[in-house]
Amino acid sequence: MKKIFMMIFMFFVINTCFSQTQEKIPWPSLADSPWPILRGDAQGTGRSEFVGPKTANVIWRKDIPLGVLYGPVIGYNDMLYVGTRAATFDSSNAFYSVTPNGEIYWKYSTGHFGPTNLGPTVGYDSTVYFGSAAGYSLYALRYDGTLKWKKPIISGFQHNISISKSGKIFYAEKDTLHIINSSNGVTISKHYYEGIVDHSISFSPTGDVLYVNTGIINQTDIYNYLNAIDTLGNLIWKNKFNNLPLSMPLVDNGGNIYVFGRDTLNNYALFSFYSDGSHRWSFPVRAHFSFSAPTIDFEGNIIFYSLEYDYDLGKDISVIYSLDYYGNLTWKYVIDPEFSWPETLIDHGFVSDAEGKIYFGSTRGKYFYCLDKNGELLWRFDLEGYEYDSCPAIGSDGTLYIGTHLQSLSANNQKNLIAIKDNPNSIKEDELPSKYKLEQNYPNPFNPSTTIKFSLPVRSEVKLSIYNLLGQEIELLFQGEKEAGSYEYVFENKSLSTGVYIYVLESQQVRLSRKMMLIK
Image (cartoon, rainbow, N blue to C red):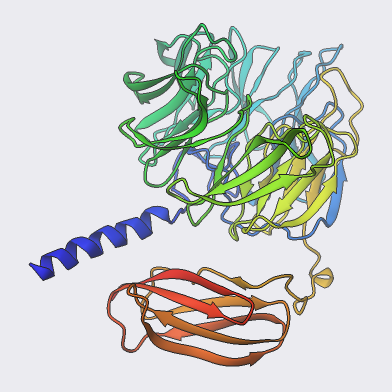
């Protein structure tokens, strides 16, 4: 009986640990590139597998005269693809391919005044898909910028071109979900869903279910729904809300779905649902916005934007929240409280990199920000009045690309496609930490060894040890004095059995602890 209990316990613990770990899901219809689709992947995670910059070192800036609203995305060889924000008066709008060095590779003219601000997405064969909001067309271009096919549409559709694993394109137009063939643009089927227009689509990890919000935003007399739909267009389930935003639902590796919303009791929250639509947890927020979307980092933490009312300041302030995988608050960061909201509005999806750093920008043209995984500000970059409404993309060499814009009729955007990358000579490896830190061990779970990293802001007498779940110290890894700096300890297991353990860093100032999992 005891053995059976231990097996059940270990099964629960192992599944819990692995459910939190988030990795890139292979998607055969998309380019196997750093950022082939808005939000990075078909699950809308906003998570990059590459390490982005920890400094605001600009390596180049490029003029996209009509501005950049959504994008860039990144294809093979780190080629960038961007549409435009503004309309023209001479039918000369265009879509751009840009090299990683900031040079225009090609420019495709649509022959229409409408901005090319819908999509873009890069397919497995380098086909680039995008749409024109006012030109009412969906385009497919080859790698060299020549037209593959063009499909007229009645109205604008969602902000990402969604492609299933089998290569079918899904897009919303008025009250209709369209399914088309990505190779030629021919319609496969149409399905009625009231209020689906403008809402973005994401997929389950297996690719056989798509998730999309429906309903008209900011109209409380018309109900909204989070819908689960199969790849034939049939409704599986739907959850009822008073209000939902236009952004993509986020889907994690375990198939759980995350959406902002106002439920039928008028409670604002970030909601998490299981794949069958049942409620998992919710975290109350003061408000949500049309295009705001959370990110989920590689450890399963969910990071997002909302508001709080500060009674001392007597005003709303912009706040970044980080929740663990189970919806518990881990940290909170207040954005520039000296400014009055909505100057600090963040109305787009966040991006997290392979280290857990968070990137986002101000919708009203203040700053672009980078936080570390613990919610500490690493840098902010002055947007010089340009607005930011997309999410950045991170290239395979760690370059962060952001596209900004002025207003919808401005044809004089300058230096608004920006590349930021660390200068190796500007980052001192011996730069002193600002506080005590104990990092999550890696790999985790592990066998037989794992690396534990910690940082000390001042010379300290420290102790690094391992405890069991009963709180008993079972192994001393290090005890002694160390200078200020960052350290790592490789733990080679020789005696511990399979299980969950706690490693602890202690000094006179702090006691920090984290869990690790050993599997034999």
